[in-house]
Image (tube, rainbow, N blue to C red; front, side):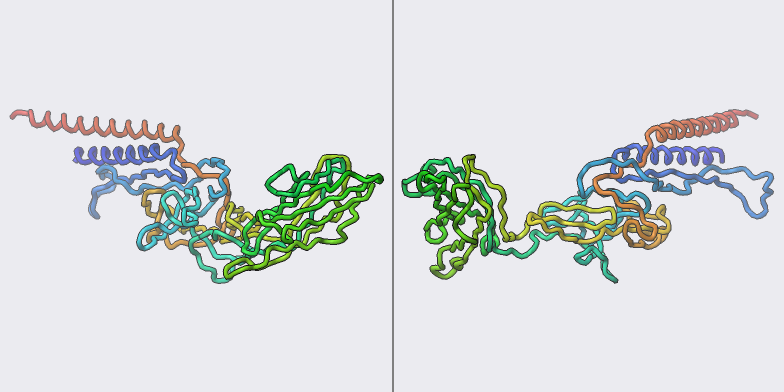
Length: 417
C-alpha cells in the first residue's frame, strides 16, 4: 500500500506544481485570478476499524480554489479601460452563434468597426438601457451598447454676427473686385456656417476700401460676401462706412444676404442669411476680428466616449452633443469560486456558483467602477515562487518515500529460506 500512498503524494505535488505554474504564466494577464490547490487525506477504513490503529492511504485533490482578491491597478488614460474596484464582473455576450453570456474582470474595451463596445475577443459589453438623463427605467433590459454615428438634427444658419476692426490707414483700391485676386481687396475674413443640408461650409466677407479718407478721417468700404465660393446678393457689394472717430455709420441694422435662386429640380432652395456688423470700428491699426457667431447647427459626428464612476456610458459629438447610451451592467454570484473558467479571462455560471445577480456599480453590494484603469493579475510572484519550492520539496519527499518502499520490497524478495 505504501507504493500507492507515495504515488498519491506524487500526483498531489504534481497538481500543485501545475497550478502554481499556471499562476506564474498569467502574471501579466489582465483580470486573471490565481488558484490554490487544496488537498484532503485519504483513510482506508470501515465501521469495524479501530480508530486508534488506522493508517492513512495518501492524499487526494479536494479543490482548485480560485482566489478573487483584487489585482494591481494600472492607469492607462483610455476612457474604455474599466476596473471594478470591489465585487462584481463585467457581463459580456460572446461572439458565437448563440451569444453565450460570460463574465470577466478584464475591462479592456474599445469601439469596434460596427460601433459596438467590445473587448479584444469581440465580446460585447452588456449595459442597461437608460433615459436621456441617464436614469435607468423600471424593467430596463440588459443588452449590447452601440454608439450612434451622428447626433441631433441640423439647423441651417440664419444669422451671423461679426464684430471687427478695419484698418483706416489702408490704401484705397479702384480695380474691379475679384475674389481670386488678393490685390483687388484689402482684407477678408471667413466664418463657418451650416447650409440647408446640414453641411458645414464657409461664409467669406471681402472688404475693399473705396477711396482715401476724407478731411474728417471718415472711411468707406465695399463688402462682398460669398458662401461656399458662390456670391451672395448676386455679387453686389454692400457699403460699410465709418465716421472720423471710427464709429460705423452704415449699414443701420443687419444686412440680408441672399443665395442664388433655385434653378431646377434637386437644386438648393434660395435662402437669406442676415449679417450683423454692429460694434465694428475703423482705426489706424491692423485688421482684426473681435468676435463672431452664427446660429446654425451641424449634425454631430461621433468624437469620443466616456464612462463615469456610476457606469453611465456617454458619447460625445462634434456639435457639442453628449448622449447617454447606457449604464454598465455588473454581475455577482453567491459563490464566485464555483464559476467555470473558460479561458480568455471568461467565466460562466454553474450550479455551484449560482445564477448571476445583475446590478450596477455602487449599488446593492457591487463595487465601484473606475475608468482609465485596468486591473492586472492578482498573482504575487514572490509568493508563487516560495510555493513552487515547497511543491518541489513535496514531490522530492514523496519520490524518496516511493524509492524507500521499493528498496524494502527488494530486500524482502532477496530473503532466502
